[in-house]
Image 1 (cartoon, rainbow, N blue to C red):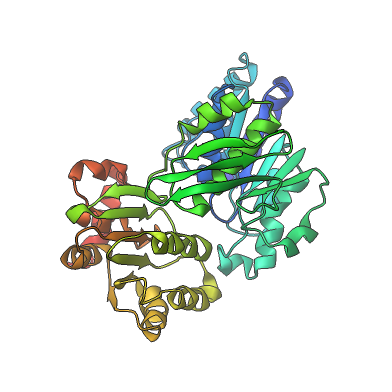
Image 2: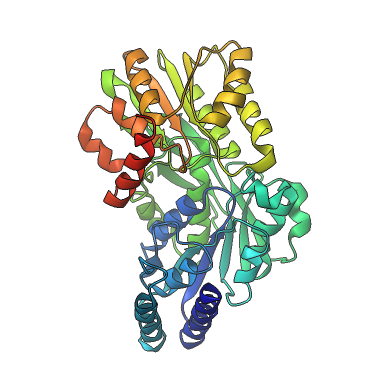
Length: 427
């Protein structure tokens, strides 16, 4: 009851905010994976022209989303009545105060059926971006069709929507009722797309951005590795064009694009190695995409470290096995796993392919092993989830400089206390 009352009150404040400030544009992002990367990319591009409100964390649930939209700090103790009173007072001030932003960019999350559609009861976004439909929280959703219905529902309560054509199967178009829909991606069949002309995997991508509004394609340099990392940027460019930005503004915005911590971030490792830090989270689609990037690198040795993909429910066995079957012994010197699901299902599938495989109970042991086998000029991909995996701690073992630890995810004092308690169980 306590949470429900707070939620209703926050939603009321958000409705009042947009009623009092109808000039403020609302852009929302949903999807199984890639929400935060897409949200940050959109905000980065739009900041070249607009005043943008963005919460860079993953505040995307029923309580944190309204506060993020209003620009109000989320209570550290959600059971503290006084902290909520402070939040309510700040929300009221936002409603009454003069407009301080032009655009609000907000991600909308869901871990069970009905949460994204509920946002439509009090939000009417100007633009919705749907980043992907893939396996997520399958213990609740059960089927991919249910996931698709959930994530695509945002398009139906928004003025217009941009749909990732590469990572959303066309069969799910049945869930779309809004006619004002465009597609984006790295496929030329998408209305907004990017064609890479020089994919130097270690440096990024140089190519051309195409859009219906442009008479000629726009030259673009994107300092991110991996084809799948381009899609959030393409979405951001599409949103920018929809909101009237010109190519000079878009080009300048691209210069400010940087990889986010734990999301395909390139770091310098020991022995002149390249570390691909993709430790923020893991899902079947994201893990497969990351692995394919590793395969593209022209290096003498490739190592992949996979942590369990969490929240897959009954699909966990099949998804971990499928990822193991993608491990190619001709491309990989080592396949290293962390966590019981990866050891039980992914590792045997990779071994059956002929890969050299080693499994560990925790990330610290895995990091020490990588350090012992890494060769000069290697490339190492770390791909893992949050709960019970924490592969960012394995990355520390092979960083060239401890100074780069600040670029890793979950390094705040609170997180380190939590992780130290977790790893102490293995000592």
